Image: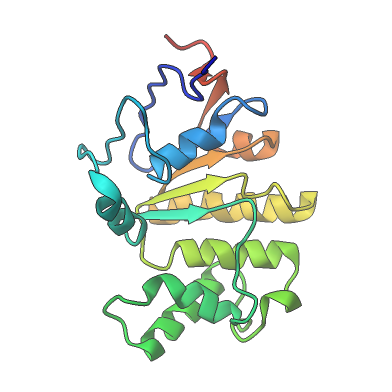
Length: 206
């Protein structure tokens, strides 16, 4: 018997909002985020961004290279590249020259608390530092939307709190709209709104 991962889910996220999606394992949290990012297709329904419905793979790829930044539970840094080179990767193919990409990457690393660490390889960074690099990479193309799937899931409590503070500061300072999937009550509490998914539906919703 086929069961939909998302069942009649209706969710609106306001510009500048920091939204937490919580719920038990298997409730559809990550599926919802992947759908918002265009990483999976929908059998029914639609996703609209700023009143516009993305159409097709090319449209979604363009959005993920610009307005939408992604952060995952695992940092997915390339081990053969430095921290700055990892951050610069999303800018490859854009208008910036190689030198300018690295200058911006270093500036983003400073913004997430890693000033002067651009030359380090991922293996020389702690788990919290690696996740900060991943967040800097997600900000490389000035996204207006940041989607994060369990961004503190692999971190200890101290590093988790640092990442939560960083995301809160970015939301407040830059006005970035954030949707954060999390099991962590502290992460959820730092957000401006929370919704809880159960069996692919918003708990208490229609």
